[in-house]
Image 1 (cartoon, rainbow, N blue to C red):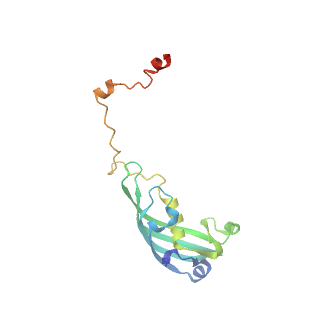
Image 2: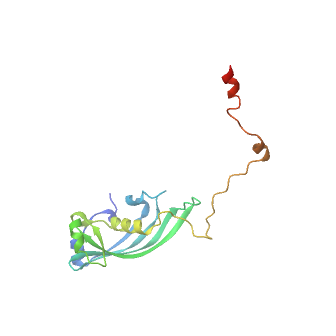
Image 3: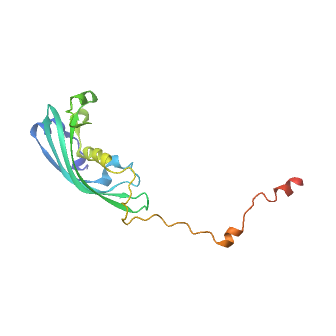
Length: 170
């Protein structure tokens, strides 16, 4: 059974009715975020309000929560607070994108249907850092350096071709 946030919704019906859809989405279940290094954990919740603007269906997405990524410096969990509010114009085809008002981003809703998970995924792909790193002064520390070679190890030098001349003279 699919989650309520993953089911496609009829954009025109929701926009004409001025509907609000509340959601809570576990980020690990969003297939569009699985391409990020080490994936994403955490959850966002919020509300999608549908309306019309200049004849175009609009979704106003408000979401709050926490994304858990892997710091690419120390490879430990990194928590990022998410507090976003965005408005997108939903269109059925790329040809309709020109009708979207200039103050909105166009988002494709094929067949006039889109899931809340798709709206959340699109916004997170634009919001989350490409290379997640802890801020300076946070718990992040670079991995420990390799131990320095001892003087005994430095004195010995491996010469793999040292006896090659002898072997060739035979």
